[in-house]
Image (cartoon, rainbow, N blue to C red):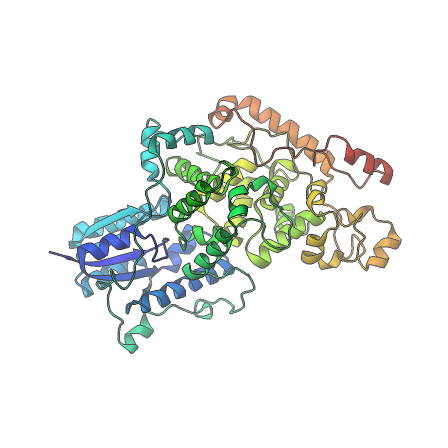
Amino acid sequence: MPHRTIHLFRKGLRLHDNPTLLAALKSSEIVYPVYLLDRIFLTSATRMGTKRWHFLLQTLEDLQTNLKKLNSCLWIIQGEYEAVLREHVQKWNITQVTFDDEIEPYYKEMEKTIQVMGKEIGFEVFSLVGHTLYDVRRIVELNGGTPPLTYKRFLQILTVLGDPEMPVQDITAENSQKLSPLPEVDLAECYRVPLPEDLGFSKEYKSSWRGGETNGLQRLEEHLKNQGWVAKFAKPRTIPNSLLPSTTGLSPYFSLGCLSVRMFFHRLSKIYAQSKNHSLPPVSLQGQLLWREFFYTVASATPNFTKMVGNPICLQIDWYQDAEKLHKWKTAQTGFPWIDAIMTQLHQEGWVHHLARHAVACFLTRGDLWISWEEGMQVFEELLLDADYSVNAGNWMWLSASAFFHQYSRIFCPVRFGKRTDPEGQYIRKYLPVLKNFPSQYIYEPWVAPEEIQIEAGCIIGKDYPFPIVNHKEVSDHNLQLMKQVREEQYKTAQLTRDDVDDPMEMQLKRGCSEETVQKKKLARSNEQGQTD
């Protein structure tokens, strides 16, 4: 007998390459597309800032619009997910519940709860992989039951698996007849996508990223038009402080599953096949998808992946507890314009370039403030549109040199790094307008500007913009010794994720930075020494 099915959207908020939904349509007489908007569950599982809520609601509205074109709809059911799912299973005489496989512990817990409910009241549970390139359980299995802890080993496993499966056919008018019909007008109001103000959020949304499959596909197609750029893309050569994104900017859409990673992977393969010389992993666009897959794989089989304590691959470090400095970092008040501009962009737009993320993460952790990567991870989780359980935690462990990254003597200079790609400081002038009138030679370190220059610029350091909260040279030297000691004492843990190649993302970014206490000529001379551009 064909099923009566509820298909639960969690991530995978799209109609292209949606294998679980397609399978549900093939096995059912009717399929109800459902999104359970359980605010208590979502806010307990992850920190969601206002912009992420806006992006999610826009994505749900877009999915609703696309389903209506197929004479169906997305049923938004608000409330505690277990109670409202049980209610609708009984109301609609459901015999099957389907959803995409996910790796996050909170989604795994939800899946167990639904499976127990199914046994209790009599429905089947069915799921397929849709959010990753591969079934990460298979990667773990091929590695002997443990996750590959280096990118090199991970790629070796993939040579056994071969390329990811091809995307499945899109959901169209031809294969969607089993989707539930549009409800009556009164009923539709009960199940509509809520407005931001319905959930207590402001209507205002300034980010240039608008949620939804439609917008994600449009961005994707725009990038893929430039096949030369796609073929030659090398992430370390993109610019962290360009005024427009120098990378694809697709990450928010992959995070919610508005875009299929498998579809993107195979579209890239077609372009590479037509190019004699194209970039390769880890720096190519396909390489970026594989980094994502790597972190998903490790996260799926590592206890307490988003924490230091109880995390077997993470160095146990006695980070400082400094609420004041953490607050100044989060609110763009460190006194280092490059760092503060990045954090301002993050607050305003919900996105910053990956190298900009590297700079502020290094500054918070091993570079300057010696504050736990967990604190930074939580801020990013709240503010980033592309916040992702696996990638966010993996990158923070990497950038704090707590796992994965071992060239810990490479510390991003909060002055020199940004100056390399934007010597005029246009990025700082945009995001920190209080500094916009400073001459270029002082824009990255306004505290060394003579008083008359500060007056002329209309910004007195210490009054209109803060002094640096630390002396970079002193604290970075001290922190380097602390990290060296930690790694010597925890040598076995450090070796778990050690690869035999340098990180291509951070090559040639060396330590060293001018300080406010150094005279101008000496400062300029010291900046030329021990630096690589």
